[in-house]
Length: 177
Image 1 (cartoon, rainbow, N blue to C red):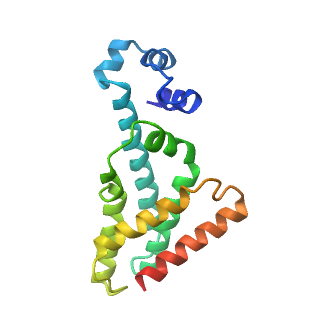
Image 2 (cartoon, rainbow, N blue to C red):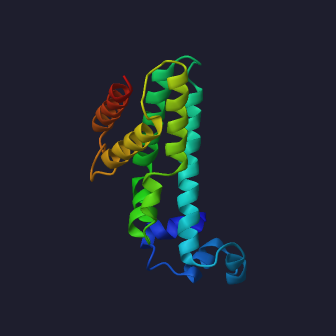
């Protein structure tokens, strides 16, 4: 998959052939087809890996917060998610926008939204905030963050990035309080 990712970033998804991928990875086409039935399957596997890696970094950030620091957990979630997107903008755009599009379901039902919803539900139970519908709030916050970090040229300078992350964290806090 790493070879396919590099080729997709270099050439784009459409121009990259399965032969390009197998040559770069030094594997036979037969070996490729043991794992993937098409280039679209590779793109989907890259999407799954992207989301899982992002979730892993979010989990690490949230786990570093003290047990009762719900605001810290929430802003840590927002920060780690935003940084993950910002650090992989080209890859994210390539596999989620430039390649054959995933369903819109990913904007309402994915591992990151589920994780955020669990955090909001638990924070509700612990009286950190009082949300009428944590699931709705998770979808709302995720899509707001996703939309902001997907803007062209956003967070390119270190100063812009710090301001952007501050603003995202601030908006997350405001929504739950």
